[in-house]
Length: 475
Image (cartoon, rainbow, N blue to C red):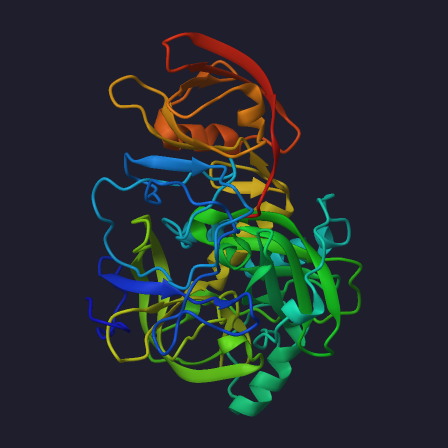
C-alpha cells in the first residue's frame, strides 16, 4: 500500500502484513529561526547534530555499507530534506549509534507490543510515577536559548487517574478534550550540534515530577534538550533518562519539576477500527494544535527510509488513523474521545493526498518506558548518556571487523591513533561483527568507560589501545 504523499489504503481489520511508506513527524527549526524543509509535504524528523558529513552515504541499519560512529559536530550545515519511508536501496550503510550516532532515519524496528502484557497499564504508570521522584543521575545539558524554544502540541491527560477502564458512556467534545489534555503536554526543543540548529517535538507527562514520554527521534542527535509545559508555559532543562531507538521511544526528565499533571491512560488493546480519536501535537512548531479522525487500522507496519542515506527500518504494531498528523506532532498524544492516551503520534504516510497517520500504542510505549525508568538496559534500551568512539565504519569485506572510513577530529579514536582504512577487530576482547557489531558493543558502554580496542592498521600491523569513550549526542 503505497502512494505519493500520504498513505491511501485504509485497513478495516487487524492486518500486520501490509507495509506503508511514511515519515516521522518532527519539525526542524532552521538556523535563522524559521520552520523549513517540509513545506506542504509529509512530516519531517529532527535534524541530526551539526557534524561534518563523511564522504560516504549515510547508512541503512541492515545493510553492509559504512556505519557512522562519531561524526564531526562542528561544520555541517543544517539539512533541508527529510527522510521518506520505504524500502531501503541495496548496499547502503548503517549508522553506528551510541558510538557517536549521526543518522537521519528515526523510527525503528519491531514494536515490543507483547511487553505490555507483562503488567497492567495502571501498574506501568504507577511504577513510572514512583520512580520519577528519584531519577537516575544524568549529564545536564545546557538549556536551549529562549529563542530556540517553540510551542508544542497539547499532551494527553484528561485526568490524573491512571487506571484504565471501559470507555465512559459520555464522550467529550474536542475543545474540552484538548483543553484537558494540554495539562499534560510538554513542548520539546532539541538543540542539535554546535550551530544551535533546533528540532521541535512533543512529549506527554508520565509523572507529576516531570517524567516525559516522547519519540526517540524527537531527541535524537541532541546536545541539549529543553521542555515547556503547555499548561503554564514553565520552561525546564531536560536530561535523557533513556531511549529505545529501535522502537522510537524515549523518556526525558524535566529538571526540578513538581506539581505537574500526568496523563490519563486507556488500554490500547481495546482500541477498535472505527473509534474516534483526537491527536494533539506541536504541528509546525505552533503548539496546541489538534486534529480529529478515526482509527482505520491496527497492527500496521511501516518502513522508514532516509533518501539521503538510504537507511531504513520497520516499525510494526502501529495504530493507523485517518488524521492529518503533521510536522512537530512526534511524541504527542493520540487520545480517545474521553481524553485518555491510546498512542504516541509517530509518523505520517508519504504516499497519497489522504491524511494517514501512525501511532505507537500506549501499552507498548509504556512498557518500554517502564524498562527505561527501571534502568533495565538491553540490546534495544539504552540508559543515560550516549558513548562516543568517534569513527565512521563499514563492514570489512571478507576480513571480519569494521573498516574505518572516517574519524572524528580529537575524538577518542583519533587520540588513540585509529585512522581511515584501519579495521577494528575487537573491543574488550569481543570480536567486532562488522559495523553493526561495533555499534552493538559501543551501545553497551557508557561515557567515561575505558575499552580495549584492537585494530589492524593500513600497513597490516595489529595494534591495541585502551580508549576512554566520550559523550556523544542523545538518542
